Length: 435
Image 1 (cartoon, one colour):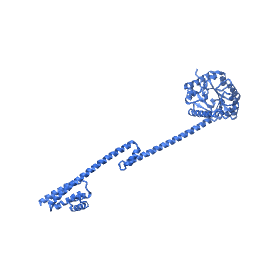
Image 2 (cartoon, one colour):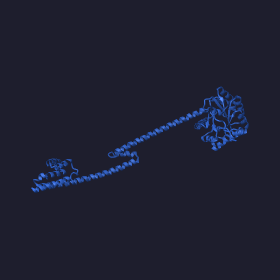
Image 3 (cartoon, helix red, strand yellow):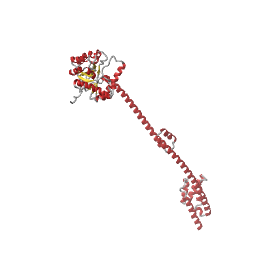
Image 4 (cartoon, helix red, strand yellow):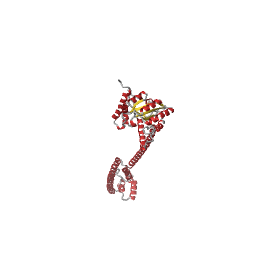
């Protein structure tokens, strides 16, 4: 009896040792339940469970191992210790079979995990490269080919974000293109409007002009009008007020034939005139310059010898203005403060050079084209003058022919014929030099 008790003790200890080695093994759930029943000494229940497992699969190692434990349990060992020992040996054999199978399974699992790890690393590297490349096409290929990848969701989200950004960028470009197109149309309309304003501003056209001359005149009017908008304190066309005043201006004098006749007409009709004279002509006809001043007309600056100023260097422009100014000063003791460029030729550099001499630039708003057409047409244009207009004429035969009736017609329309200084509110002469 004593030997049987000792044997039962060692057999239980051996089984407990085997059972303690099992919790870490990945066993089937039912087999694990049977082992727990054995630990609780519920042998009959464990026997029923393992018999059921063996009925389902006679080769199940875990079930055979459990059934060997049942047969060799203390319950049977008390009656047949030798049989119990044999069952313990069988259980031991099944244990090692089970252990070997578990090791093989764990090895296969480890290999699979290594493969998955390498695959995950490769996917991660591919995903990082795709993101870094900013290539949406490559990202689309990744999304379509790696549906089961752990990066599929984030890649899909990134692709959607890029598509949104692309759509937004395309919309911004479309809006910018539309804005530029609208701005270009507005600018074209503004240019057309400016051209119309310029042509409205400068009344008069010659019936003798060719189509090319008409286009050139339109371009000049548009260009100089735009220049006056950018330099409102340096370049003047007409007065902006509503007073019924008009200034009659005469260019290119004095001459030996027509200037004296114009002065006679102005005296007879009681009208003021503003003469833009050439310095070279003033030197040839000084008495006419003195007469202009003596009879109350303005003696103003039209350059020394009538060059096209836009073809000159700035210092040459200044020289033209100042040489003529010095001639006038010698004759009447005053320096003109108002200047008219020959041909009306102006650009920003020329206007700046004129301004550097202290002079203001004055063009015209009614052009009679008296140098290109006869007196009746000159009269027809001149009598269309509006309040604040500056009428351009020259010392020409057509001017002498048209001027008397032009003055009378303007007076009948209620206009006062005044000098440019009064019309524009600008000083006609520069301050006197200190002696």
